[in-house]
Image (tube, rainbow, N blue to C red):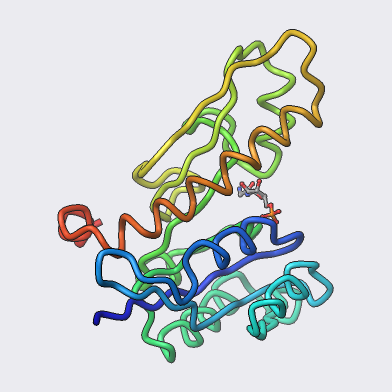
Length: 201
Ligand code: GAR
């Protein structure tokens, strides 16, 4: 049996972290077992840390505020990730801009709560809700030097209902996120065709 190892990075609530662990951690797909071997959070009080404990997983806290520059913080992330020899890093609500120090060395995917390239940045849910867009959605993409700009892997949309509130919009986004992030991880790590194609990304 093949084992593929993932690391998950998050910053706060961790609902996507929990959905991902529930669907993939220690599960077998297409003869491949996916194992989460590293969790990193940059905020020591993040609720996701408690969620991870339900799966028997401890989270490594690396606070960005303790570093002098983005590059130094990123170098520490890279060191921790390389020590675990992971196949894929998943950013699940990790709210830090990553520099070339990270992106040039680590194969990672990111979850973003909009239909990229629309509404990049940290306010995508509000920005898309208060726009004229009649659809909202979610993207999963490879992490590159450009913020929210790497190659798109998967997207899913939903239609705006007439009486939708910001909360409804956000709920719809999270519902989709909890489905498509695990799907992407499974596809990348277990479907040969896609894995080979993405080797050069
Ligand atoms: C998610 O909506 C995710 O798409 C977003 O943070 C939220 C984390 O929620 N990420 C970004 O905006 C990245 N630019 P969670 O902590 O409940 O998983």
